[in-house]
Image (cartoon, rainbow, N blue to C red):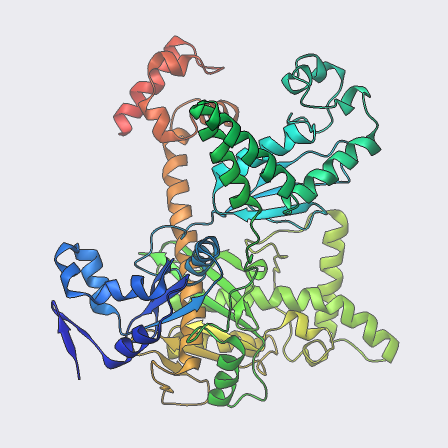
Length: 562
C-alpha cells in the first residue's frame, strides 16, 4: 500500500524503517531505485530528522532540488554513533566515499583539522595539519570545530609555556623579536633558558592535556567564570564560559572512523562483491587486484587514457596511471585502447624480466633471446641516464615489442605484485578485442579480461559471442560500475587538465620575444593568465623584464586575444 504525499510515494519499507529509528544521533544514507547512495546526512535525533523528509506539512517549502531528492528516495540506511560530533565526522567520511549527487559539501579533498607534534624535532612544536602522514609525529583529532581547537591550543601553549613561533629551529635572532618569550609564555629553549629534556617534559604534559587529562583545568576555568560573574564582570565570564566549552568540545573522545564502517546496512561489501564477480565470470578465485582502462578525447584532440587499480575491491590510488595517446591520429578508441594496454604491460614485463633472469640463471633455465636483448638494452640506457620516459613513468620501448609467450615471467612468484587478476575495459566487443590482441602479442593471454558496455551494463567476454547480463541489482555489476566510473572520472579530469593547460600556455607562448624566464615571472606575479589579463599596464611593468613599452605591448596583445 502506498501513501501519496505531495506528488511522491512513501513505500512500506520506508515507513517501517522510520518507525524503528531510535531517538539517537547518527547518519543516514538515502538510496534510489538502483541502490545508489544519492544523499548522506547527519542527525542529532535520527527518527525526527529522517521523518521530516516524508511529512506532508513540510513539502510546500521545498525547492526543486530537494523535491527531486525526495522523489528519488526508494530506501535508506542508518548508522548510530555516540555523539553529534561523531555524526559530523562520519558524514564527511561517507560523502567523500560515495560522492552522492545531492551532497555539495565535503565532496572535495579537504579534511578536518588535526594537530600534530613530532617529539623527535630539535625543539618540538604543535602545528595544525589536514592530512595524517606516516612521519613519526603524534596526531590529535580530527576536530569538528576548528575554532575551538585553535583556542584550546592557545590555552595549552600558555598553560605549559610552549613556543608558538613557526621557525623549525629558532635561535637567538628569532628570540630577539619573539612575542611569546617577552610575554613569558614560552620558556625559550632556543637560547638555553631550559634544556631540551625539560622542554620535552612540557610538551609531553601538553599532549596528555590534549588527550583529555584536563579536569583540573576545567574546574579552574569554571571557578574563574563564577568569580567573574559574581563580580559582575560579565564579559570576562562569557569569555571563560566559551573557553570552557571549547575545551570540553575539543578534548571529548570521539571515534575517528579511520575506515568506513562496512557493517552499515546495505553498504558496499567488497569481499562479497568480489566473490559474486568470480562466480559470474567463472574465475578460479575472487580477483583481488583489478585494473581498468578508459579512453577520453574530444573530436580526436587531447586523446588520453586512464588506468585505475582496485585492490580487494577498494581503490588503490597509488597505482593509478594516466597516459597521453601518442601513436593514434584522430578519434580511434580501438587503436588508442590497444596502445595503452601495450604500453602498460610492456613496462611491467620489462621491469619483471631482470628479476626473472636472476632466478632462471640459478635454475639453469633460458630467457628468450629477444626478451634478454631488450632487457640488456634497457639496462644500458638506465646506466647512461638516457632512458626515455613515458607518461606513466615507465620506460619507452622502441623498435619492437616484447616477444610472445614470456611464460617464465607471468608464472613467476613475483607476478602477483605486477599483473592484475582481472582487466576491465570500458567499452564493448571492439575495445575488448583490441586490448586482448595486444595481450596475446605480449604472451599475457592467460590474464582474464572483460569489457563493460555502458548502455545496458553488458559484460563482454573474449570467447563468448553474446554479452553477459547480470542485472543492475547484481552486486558484481555494481562493483564493475564503480571501477568503470572511477576510470572514466580519472580520464576525463586528465583531458580537462590538458585542455586548460593548453589554453593558458598558448596565450603567452604566442607573444613575440617572450622566453621561459619572463613568462615564469609573469605567472609568479599574477598566478594565472586570467589575472594577467585583468592587470593594468603599471602592474605589468612591475614585473622584472617588462618596461613601460613591453608592458603596453603585452597588454595590447592580451586585449586582442581576449
